[in-house]
Image (tube, rainbow, N blue to C red; front, side):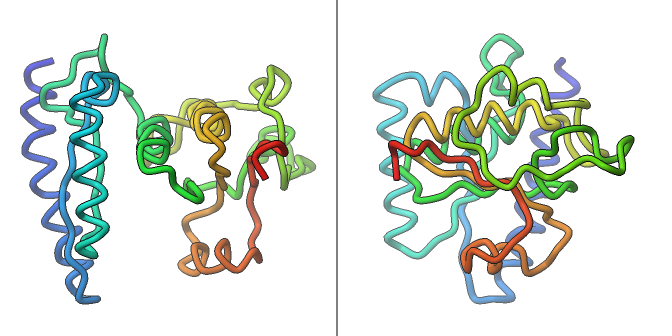
Length: 193
């Protein structure tokens, strides 16, 4: 555990260097905000995080939010970026949460093993049937898989925030989502529209 935490602290510096280099090409400033479950579940610490995020937005600074893996322990971690993104979206009352993946969205079966699997474009209720469609443990780039994306969708939609899962390999996908012209899965609760 100590080695992983030390590696996380080194990796975080490298990650922020890459983000800074990328965003500076567009004249954008970034900031790092490392959260833990302890921070988001403690009202004083949560309010401080919310105020920091609000101030960054007011200053036109893009916050890069990540879990503070260098101090988090298994018992008090989110453990995946899908859940952390949903929690962060609820903190700032986001208009929309977008999760980019290596898959187009939620399918009725595993599309890698079933070529007849169908993409589900809209989900208005996340129940056991929907959770049963989640297969696998993540991609080559992540640990979450569809199960954590569905959990994130539940957190977001329960807070009245719609969420989209779409394929991040398409460089235009965020523009397409904002223009409502995309291939993916939209999650929302009808009573929140």
